[in-house]
Image (tube, rainbow, N blue to C red; front, side):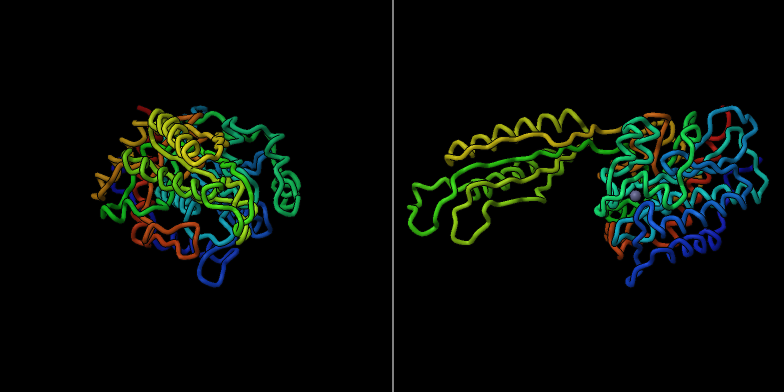
Amino acid sequence: METTKLMVNRKRLLDTINVSSSIGSLENGGLNRLALTEDDKKMRNIFVKWLREEKLEVRVDDLGNIYGRRKGTFNDSPAVAIGSHLDTQPCGGRFDGILGVLTALEVVRTLNENNIETDYPIEIVNFTNEEGARFEPPMLGSGGVAGEFTKDFIYNTKDNENISFQEALINIQYMGDEKHRLRDIKYFIELHVEQGPILENNNKLIGIVEGIQGISWLNVKVVGETNHAGPTPMENRKDALAPTAKMVTKVYEITNEIEGLKTTVGKLNVKPNITNVIPGEVEFMIDVRHKDDEIRAVTIDRLREQLGTIAVMNNVEVTISTDWNSDAVLFSSKVMDAISEAAGVLGYSTLRLFSGPGHDAKYISKMADTGMIFLPSINGISHNEKELTLEDDIEKGANVLLNTILKLARAQ
Ligand SMILES: [Zn+2]
């Protein structure tokens, strides 16, 4: 059987994406489809209808994750799972994780219309609340099935209006059964837009994701003394903001010395934040990312030491605590090779890269050999109405996904 030249139906795929783009649509072409809202329900209902049309066995679990299972020759074998998420940010794009779910659907439609039977079963997955825009933290659906979060924790997270995840799930009638959760899988493949400019900058089409960078959030509290801006001589001040400026500069100096390190100071609070009062306290956050956990740890030690020195030299006190840590994830080389081979057969250029943001694949990688396919994001923009992945690239990405699945769903 010649399977390597099998191609998806471009028009059908783009039409399907267009239907999704009409649910929760915003004025400038983006989407507002927060998890477990009425629009999410509308999208889910259509998605379930599409799964049923393909004669897939549909399940919904107790976290609202939706699965569509296609039988395999060895139907008791673990399945090859493909998918991502259909929810968006409040001002999100049309592609993001949506592509991962809808290209998975197109893969199955293509297999069905060509009567191709795979050895292993295939499961399409839509994970609940990947974005974390309504319920924090992100990736609650995938994190739940992978054992990262307990059911209690997930059910009790609340949105801005104090509605719990559990209530919202019941409200949209997507409360399923725990026994339906994703369990015994052989592989998980997630196609996603890159959300960065690396593929575009390198003029490459298919991103073969090697893993997801580790992240630490450091909370830095600088304490000086509040005083009047007029009478207090400069030499007698304990200004917390002036040394903070030096600290922020130092963060980026250190960052520039370490290859592949990314740091961001994106949040800063000054107290009392009044024009004629010397700031007595400043609190800011540092987001630190690297693919190597060891390098991230060494960086954090260095930041502690150097910021501490700046504090001493400037007569203020500093405390640095770690608010959140998430270790780097390495994806399966077997999956990377399968993606690489599929792209090669189709004649598409590839680039191996690490993901900056987290994805459902991060947690599911604890359950099975996992990999991700990235497609170029124009200008690297995402979580924005302007997010754009070209139709040609979507079609080619879907073909890579199809051929990757054909390879991985074959008993070896
Ligand atoms: Zn996403």
